[in-house]
Image (cartoon, rainbow, N blue to C red):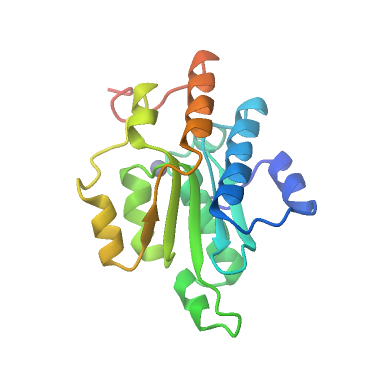
Length: 193
Ligand SMILES: [Zn+2]
């Protein structure tokens, strides 16, 4: 189920993609997916993608699908990691470091990972996390980011995962605000109790 992408995204991915050599280019592309996920009404205002750090090659991309799949696990980051792992045929994306191509994976996400997605990162084998909006930005419109470790960046870096924040943050925040203003569903552990 975590590999399920909406039809519009599969069509989008089948098209020729632009070169995305910088993190800013990759993030803008990911943010466009979040915007389209709202427009297509296929999920929440979040998107994520896995790239090869060195070449900029897209490995997998996904969007939030919690509501459309009725699956609390279906955050964009979890979906993108699952799709990338299936694509490379290994549960540990760092195993691809051994490839002749020297591939190393990064997760580019339109919003900082919540507690669940943060928890999944060390087991995924990514080597870098790139975020746009901060957790506080998602919390401002009502999402609950969960009980994340207060030193989450340091915990990731201790495990060999570099963290880069605030890449195109303003653009990602604008999408969160637009989603909220349009009456988009806000779901989380606090909301449901
Ligand atoms: Zn999450």
